[in-house]
Image (cartoon, rainbow, N blue to C red; front, side, top):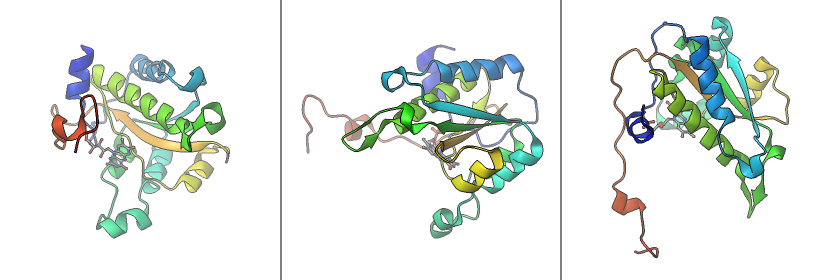
Length: 186
Ligand SMILES: Cc1cc2nc3c(=O)[nH]c(=O)nc-3n(C[C@H](O)[C@H](O)[C@H](O)COP(=O)(O)O)c2cc1C
């Protein structure tokens, strides 16, 4: 798939079929993360690839954070079921000391955002789908997966074949709301 077409047509996928992900497609997704740009090429990312149904189900339970969603009237994270149903879940972690910090900005989060987009585009280009899940109980998830306490869990990515051929997504702000030419205006 051509790059711009992949960027335009990628949507967050939250419903998956039970068709397994071919190992070479999973490998290509992991290699897409490996190729992402990062602060001083320090490559802070660490990935935990989960396929065990019981562990995926527990990860799904841990993606509902009551203090976050209850105030918004949600009884589940919109992607919660996807984490149990997708054949693969990639838990995207970072080693924060292997990135930069400047002006109070922690660049491991930037590195991980770019890596996440690479992951989702590589999935999409191969007919797979994914979604960045950013809400979860980090401490309990870390214990479940034996992740060391100094490693931060940044995102969960269910990965698999989308249940339906087309997935719609929410609209975008018009360009004139987000782009300023030459100087910030208004
Ligand atoms: C950092 C981040 C965290 C996100 N967390 C969640 C989440 O916890 N649950 C969920 O259903 N979607 C989550 N999303 C997906 C967004 O809701 C989605 O990208 C956005 O609505 C635009 O839709 P699209 O990806 O289909 O274009 C997250 C996306 C990002 C970038």
